[in-house]
Amino acid sequence: MIFVEKRGGHPELVVNFGVFSGREATEAEVYRLAQSLLQEVRSVEIVCERRFEFDTEVEATVHQVRIRLPASADGGESELIPLVYEWANDCIGERRMVIP
Image (cartoon, rainbow, N blue to C red):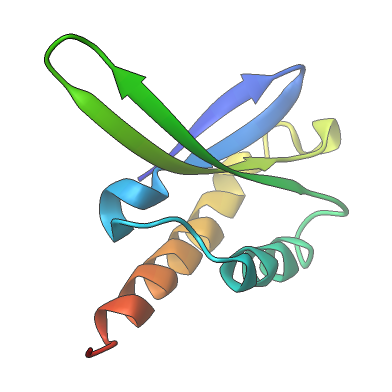
């Protein structure tokens, strides 16, 4: 569900949110994630993206949450993965409890 990338010298945590939730993260969920992360790092940038991928046989929409950490956090991203994993599971679990 979560993997680590490097972009522009900054570590990023990428959450394949839509694969597990079937939806995009809400603004409130993103703010909640930011507050959790700010207890561990000084700053963070969170990008929610919806990508469309096409080929002649398949169409896919991908909902990802990218967490760009400061360069000073390089090497410490593995310590944040459990926090982000807990956040994602909480978000996914909350919506499963909603009964129409």
